Image (cartoon, rainbow, N blue to C red; front, top):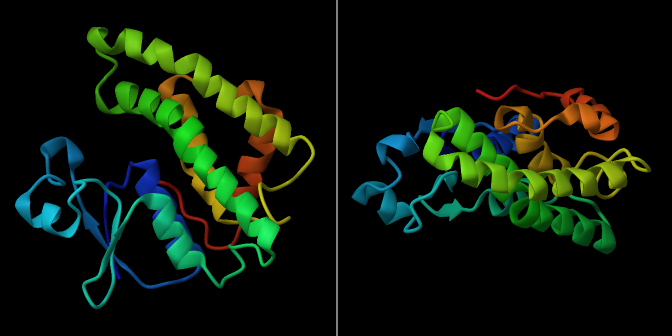
Length: 198
């Protein structure tokens, strides 16, 4: 398998985490989004949406969207809960990650880390703070009573949420306010075959 991605992107990192956790062999193909490498005719032929990550299977079939890739790779493994409600809960948190969490936490990080927090983006950055903290608050409440997000064990939901949460400070979010999240981050990092971003 080939993974096309940016090593500093949380959406790409979560794919790397699942592949490494499951000990699946893969080839990493670097794509520099700031240089427009995901917008070349060759890349767009594989993924017309022009985004990373993208998974390419041995037969040339491609799959885009980070959480769809996670589900494809993890299905039938302990990373996907075995019961119907557990699977639905995992999907619930993965949808939450893409709708409520990632658009705020990841976008703030992009403005600060990738763009250098330019003056013309300060207002946009400030607008991400309240909804980003709200998403972290939802996670904190859940984790005050549970170790994991779905199925009673580390799952694809945890990996999806971990990817941008662990580096939320890059975008100006203070994780010191969230002790349950910090404990959960340590639990994720203690799982077998965990690898750092980068």
